[in-house]
Structure formats: C-alpha cells, structure tokens
Image (cartoon, rainbow, N blue to C red; front, side, top):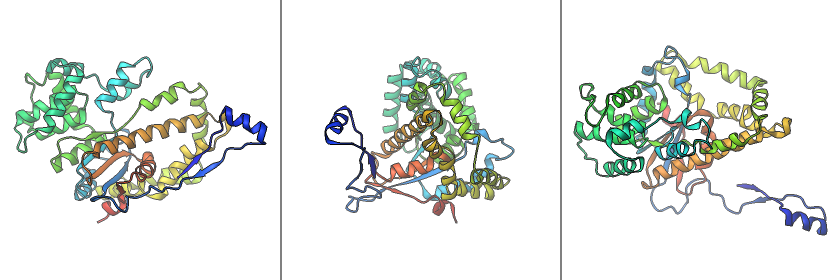
Length: 363
C-alpha cells in the first residue's frame, strides 16, 4: 500500500528554514492483501459480481429468463450472505432527516416508509428493532403469517428488498392485503417482485433459492456530499471528459451487444463485464481519466473523491454484513464499474479471500 505524504503549515515553515521541502511517498511495511496466514478458521470468501443495471436495458434485449444460467452458477457458490447495491433503511433515514443537506438524494434512491409505518403502528426505530428481533427468532418452518408479518416490518424499517424476499415465499394466493399489509403495501411489494433491478432479479431470486431470510443493502450515497459541495464546473468538465472516448472504450461498448439474445450469451456477458479487460477499460475511461484530467483546475478529481469515498463506505458495509459470520461465503451484486475497486478494497481485509468470478460462472 502506498500513501501520499502531506506537508502542513508547520512543515512549510520548516521548509523555509531547512531548504526546499517536497511531499515524500511512504511505503507501508505491511501488506494486508489476502487473508492472514495465521487466520483462526476459514477466511470469509467474497465473490464480487459486477452487473449491468438491468432496469436500463429493455426487457426485449434481456428477458429475466435469460438470467437463469447466471443464477444456476451462483447457486453452486451457495453464498450465506447476499449484499446488494441498495440503500439501507438506516441510511435512507439519515438522508431523509437531513434532506436540506442532501438535496434530492433520498428522492432518487429511497422510498417513503411512512405508509408502512402507519400500518404497523410504529416509528422507524421501533420497526427496525422489531424487524431485527423477528429475524433473530424466525422459525425454520415459517407459516404464511410469519412471512407476511416480517415483510410488513421490513418494509416499514426501510428494507424493501428483504421485505420482497419474504413476500416471494408466499404463494400468489397468500399475497393479499390484511391488517398487516395495506393495499398500497401489497401493490408495492408486488412491483418489487416483478422488478428487473438486479437487486431483485438476481439478489432476491437467488436468496429465495437458497432459503435465506434477508439480503444486505450495502450502497452508500452519504458520499454525495462531495459532489453537492463541488463547483458548478464539475458537470460540464465531466461531460467534456466523457465526450472523447478512446478506441479501447468504443470497442468495449460495442462488444457488450454481442452478449444478448440467449441465457448462454448473457452468461458470457457477465464473464466479460467481470474480466480484467473490461475492468481496465472502465477505469481508464472514467475514474482513472478523472484522476489525470488537469483542465478546469482538475475539478474532476472531486468526482474521483466522491467515487472512492462511496466505494470505501460500500465495502465497509459488506464487511459489516458478514461480520457476525466469520468464514461465510458472500456474494456482492454491484454495478460493474465498482467491481475492481471492491476487489481491491476488500482484499485489504485480514480475513477476506476474493473469489474469482470466472471460476464460478464457468462450467
């Protein structure tokens, strides 16, 4: 690991006395990559699956049925924890409470749990605690009433995808409005089950196959403060930066369309999105390019800072999600441009081993 030195006012003053002072790069004496050789027990194995955002692709191009082979292969990995790119109820509560600070962020990434809270007769903290307690004691052979109650509590707590998971366990005839689930809640849960969002179409679908009781939201948008505080020149600078893709970027974008039309092609597409070739092109065309762009006083570095802050907090959420299950297998489903950053960040954890996506997706 490398860190960049920083010379503060005192260092600058000393520089006047002692001669020209320049920042010094320091090489750490410690290498945390890979699990500790003396780790007590098995490492926590993390598979980071980079995905396209499926809601941005027309259903005709990628029908949900074409995800079946990907789901089959992920099922063989049999994760104990599935982490998805969604905001937790706690994070949304923070964004909603500080809406003036995070202007418009909650409107984009969260939903209003108020109707569900009114239906269960609880405050947000009460619903969160009740959902946590219910998950701790959830029966091994739950009834329809058990699933319905937990779906209602989770929806009120802001955990919509875990709520949808329990709704999915019910037979269609059992997915009805009741004293626990209002007509509006039922309609919303039904929409989640039909969603193309990979949090549901891959995360919830796989969790149901494996009999899990929750999925772990690990996204972060509290880091959006970096962009909110950035000057107005950031947007135009980014558009200018993105407007001149190099040949490798153009080729990679064109290549993606080869992976449409069948479940087998979609499987190959996921292997490509997670390949070193695609990941390198993504970095070079976006965040790496932001680091190198000097125009507009290097304002694109602020975009890079947002991305890195967000990624570090997301990676920390993954570590937390698996923290009470040392040695677990963890699947992270995230936008493909996050994949290399997640691998790098998580590989610094002393008890985590990164799993090769291609080895899992290949027969």
